[in-house]
Length: 203
Image (tube, rainbow, N blue to C red):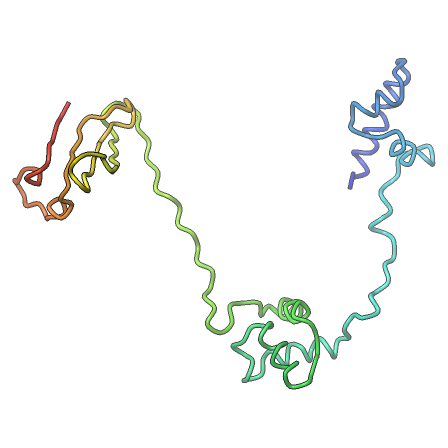
């Protein structure tokens, strides 16, 4: 929906282009407007505001009354249903031969009273933790490592390369087929834990 100031500016630009000898269709195309839209805007010689928001709209014939909306909220707050979602309330009421409103109407009524929240065993939405990010501004400032499987005669051989993020070169690597040896805790002053069938290299 185009606001009135934008309409007035577009009409003024098109009139200026026409006075300079431009065709109406070409001038409207530059503003992504159709000729019919321009003609509708300038029916009364001057651009006027969009009348769609001002048109009276009749209420739907099936709209619930205030008493019926209050009944929806009261039913949802009963001890039997206070921990149940609207989908369960509507289904349980229909099993008993009663139908008060649809599931969406229940949600709408609860939303009007600020009661749209996790009900029953539903967990409240958890905020997502932002991913940890790092930035390297010089070589050898930030390193990363990865793990990959290596094809070969030894079954289960793993390859652990480590590289500097700035240079993007593999600085060291480790290959082993005994992952349990790599998980041993290191003690202060001890060297790297390398299994018997491992190879370690520093560039």
